[in-house]
Image (tube, rainbow, N blue to C red; front, side, top):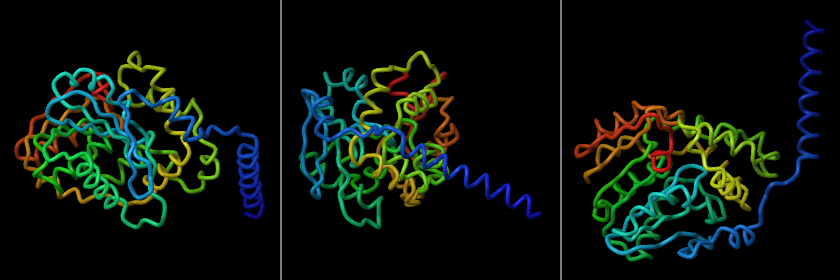
Length: 297
C-alpha cells in the first residue's frame, strides 16, 4: 500500500513539474486589442461603449433589421456568408457578444451572467433604435436569441435558431468548451490558445471537413486570443449559470429551427424539443452537417 501511494505521489509530482515546464516555456498567443482592431475591423464595423466596455458590431444593407448572434467562442465572422446573401433584402447587423470577437466584457464582479447579456441586448437594441426585427442565433447565440424573444417579444418578428442551445445546458457547456471550464488550466490558458486547438475545434464542428476554411480558423484563433477574451470565455463556461429552459415555451413568434444531423455539440433531439415547445415553429434538418449550418450549408 505504501509503495503504491509513493508511486502515485511521484506520478502526481511529475505531472505538476511537466505542467510548470509547459507553462514556463510555452510562448504567449495573446494578441493586443489594438492589433486585433487594426487587422480585423471591416468597412462596415462600428463600435460603441457599454459599461465602459467597447462593443463591436457590423451594420450593412437596407430594409427590416436582421440581427445575427454568433455562438460560444465565435464572432460576427461566423455569419459572413449568410450576411452577404441577405444584405440585399435586409439591414443585416452582426454583433460580437461581450467577451468575444472584438467586444470587451465589462469589468467588475458579476453574479448574474444571464442577466448581464439580457441587459446588454436591451441597451444594444435601444441604442440602435431597433423596435422590430428578424432575429437569428447559432449555438450560444441561439440561446441569446430565444431569450430576447422571451424578454422583448414586441421587437421580434421572427426567430431562427441554428444548432441552438436551450436544453441540458450544463451538459452542452461541458461538451462545447471542454478545455476552458477547468479552473486549474487557467494559468496555462492565460498564455492563449494554440492554433492547433482552433484547428481541432473546427474539425469537430464541421461534418464535411472539406468545408473548413483555414483563413476563418485563423481569424477565430485571433479573436480567441484577443486580450481578455480567454478569461471571459472561462468565466462564462465555468459559471454554471444558465437561463431557464422552461421559458422556451413562452416564445410566440414564428420560429425556424435549423440543425445538422451530425452535430457533435447539440444533439439532434434538442431540435425536436424546440419544435415541441414553441407553438409556431418549423424544423429544417441538413445532413451531412455539423454545428454551424449557416456556414456549412
